[in-house]
Image (cartoon, rainbow, N blue to C red; front, top):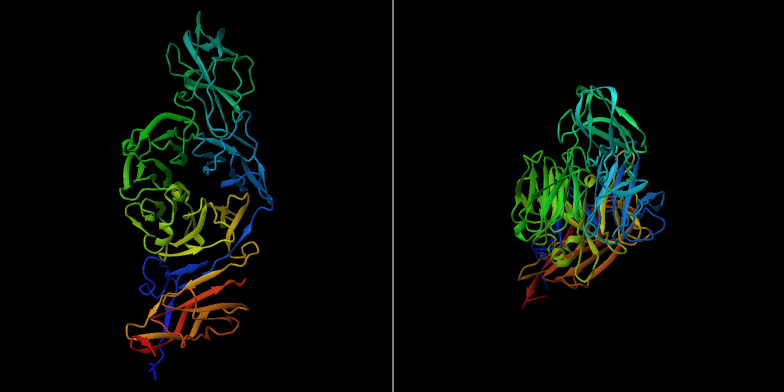
Length: 594
């Protein structure tokens, strides 16, 4: 007769998350070798919210990215990037935002890089390289070309200006944003025979859509190459104007470094009231408070190391520079104080769209197939063990496709990653940065290819995504019970309980501390890591008690290890707090359980 010990009750506290890198018998009791569509919150596992389509019909082109645009009126608009167009969400559909005359976007699937300054959205992407300026009504190129021809300046008598030589230029500008062009060629004029005026004519009209005014600048008497503001006139005005502004009433000098943006940008962002962009090798920047007037200067970032810049990310008083071998940062306030320092010399950034910040931490997917976390001083790997299998399956050529966003309501860093055998992202991994735990989300079709936040009128945060199918999705919404009609399959495996060399283990009963719901849940018992369960049954969660006991016996099929699997596909969101197992130890005779 086999001898049985008193059945122990093994209680698993939950919340430790996924751990793929350690054998299932060695992981912590609160960890899982398999965890899908449950997320961790403290010591609980909660079935994630569902997914709904925001759009009722697919857009005509493949969508690749989007941006939450908030105007000064307080209205939110979802701006979307597509293969060769930019659109906006209107109701349950996406409509194209017209482009300026002559502007055609290069059709590439690479996601746009977005940022907003005041009421203007800016975007660029690798493969096109131009900086776009976007409002809900127009897409145009950022920057204002300078006037090609000089105005006509002539003298006239009777004014307050001293006799002598003068010169004048003019610029095109946007009075709402402050964007301004470089000055036109100059025109010289001499006032003789006493004081006088300078008369202007032939001030050409700009064809750039954002230009609404022209600004005229003039030298002081007998001065060379320094021009001061004297008047602003509407862009459409071409008529004669007589000017006699005295030196004490003249304004700021004209700038000669309001250049057009570079045309080979791969990333751009706003930081410290300037726009910074990169071509993958150097960093370029605009004048202060002007996102469209580029200085023409560059900041080299270790050009000779053979690696490229993947991202520029504003992180407090630093502009983080993610290269594929290292992560640096820029400090300083102007061209005389800018300095490049190194944040991490071991952990580069492989995907710019993976870099996000939350609660003083910076997260990214980097070299060595790992995710990293930094407080601005120290950098640590956070996924190297716990999601090792998934990380090893990311193909080299697709590492720059990793897309991520933070979801502060749940303390989550959510990342969509590609996997071997596919050209698109297939799995979502979720890191709880407060509890240092991971989980995974699966989807009815493919995983989202791009993730970003969107906001409601009260600044409530939602996580949105797109799947290259022309739709926009609201992801993991607690109010949604299914994934647009498909049940959410939430699964977990407990750690393996080892009976030791002289004892086998058998499961007798399962206890679950969880929500009460008019739903059923599948319990499966496994021995020795096998894929086929030794015993399984569906049980009801309707019992109005905290700990719910269920008989699930493997006494007829004990093994060296025993493991419990749970699968839940109900529509009611449930919470699991603890799992208890009643196990029998069975003495072995001749190496086999008797």
